[in-house]
Length: 178
Image (cartoon, rainbow, N blue to C red; front, top):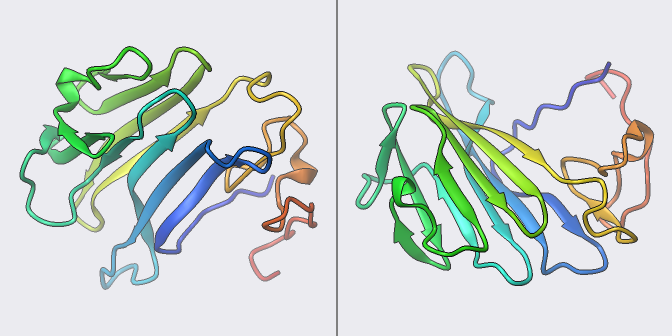
């Protein structure tokens, strides 16, 4: 089974609709630049935007934390429509829930759509603080629309997960040299 591993740095679209780009889940990957692994990157931010909900972002601050709350020994910022909040206080709106599950996991969910993003916070001596992100979308979410991104399409058909920016399927590489 081919596994996907993003080692680039920047903001990436994890999932969006070709028909309605108001829906987007983005993830930030930051280069670690350590001597042992100079080409690696780690996830340091996740954001969701959709109709009827505020833009919600979780991130590891790039500079010294100001309003950040500590989760698993790491500073984590929560932003709701550009306003800072503490993770432990949630979003302050009913359309998006953010809850601290335990000492190292944060759950972001949109009750009206069933989208769930679980963020596990990790600290590493090699990579610093980073996120492990798992996004779950119901199969029926935005039925009839073309959902694409780094996560592929949510239809359990692996052969159409690698696409061009316009959604055209391309063959997945068979090994790391392709």
